[in-house]
Length: 206
Image (cartoon, rainbow, N blue to C red; front, side, top):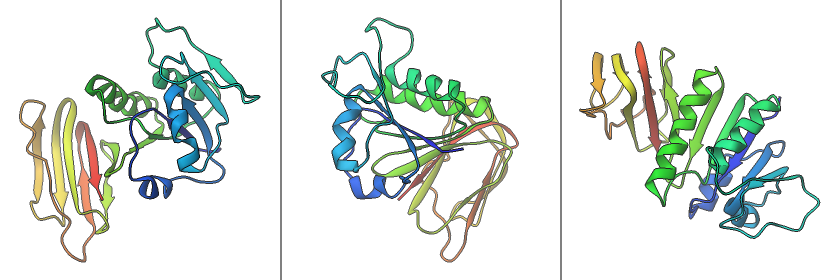
């Protein structure tokens, strides 16, 4: 099935880097002020959702879902739930971090929600790409200058990082002490990162 791309309203300045992640057959859901990115990204909406408090409701034949301004779900969370109801299991989120820290943290939690359902999700911004790491090994090639592993879900144990400048094996990272920041892939190597118990956020920095 096609991948669903959720486009939020957070600033995107490195357009060329973000555009490299897009595919012609993506199903694109624009959330409210995410519509400001459409022309720069060179893509059209397949669906528009929002309460339109930060972008005028467009006059278009494209399917549009208008949301109330007072609601439990943000526009972005609603868009993800709507995509799941349509059968999507593969997600890319862009325009979802930066600006207001509360929205950024809320959007990062979407990765956890999708992971809990067994779906694949990646979040991309101007500098990096992010995804959840659990029992499966994640590989990082030398195209990324740095990477960080951050515990965002309780306690992460059995944390292993190989072929890196600062290797660790069967370690523990708690939410109180985030020492997995800014590691580096060894030249000519592919890093391997895994977590036996718990879930962590892997941030690969271009």
